[in-house]
Image 1 (cartoon, protein in one colour):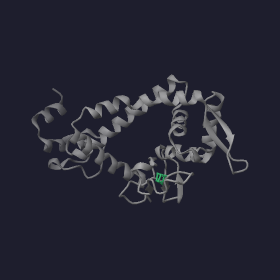
Image 2 (cartoon, protein in one colour):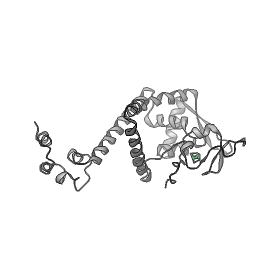
Image 3 (cartoon, helix red, strand yellow):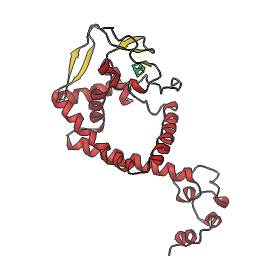
Image 4 (cartoon, protein in one colour):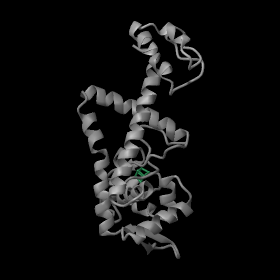
Length: 243
Ligand code: SF4
């Protein structure tokens, strides 16, 4: 039995003070500094365990998504661009909209679009109403490729569904709270659809030929199909607008 295993086997966290790494794990409390990757640190606290578990899930999903993308001859940003064009509001389908979604510069987004255009997965079209502006549109081949990327989350969703419903709800609540922190810190931007948005007014003007629903954020009517697309201005119903 190794030195570490023998200590853990005895269940004596106090002895971890003698280990060479980490500052200290005094009597089951986290160390003075957040050594989140140090095994000794997470042994003594639940939050440390969860942080590492989420890190591992993130790594696994990255690998999975890269594998799915490479099987289609795509890089990860190219695959993300296809999903963006497949599921987000059509008015966002510009170079600027894509750059915001990929959290990259317009020049980098342009490189992604060039590559997808060469592969016959999207095309640039003149945007209606704005001279010189281009709209990005998936080709049929691009739609098929985007659909096949969906399987990247299938296993994860199935494994989550196997958990008791109560655990699923607790997990949803907890992960949403963590995602909100990442949003506030500027590391992620959440795109969701109208039906869970606080700005959404369903059937506000059912006779309006421009759309029966209303967006109180942009003060515009919404046709039904658009309400099922992802939007970066979404705020959770009952929640507050994001900073
Ligand atoms: S802000 Fe909300 S209601 Fe308006 S388009 Fe976006 S998701 Fe829909």
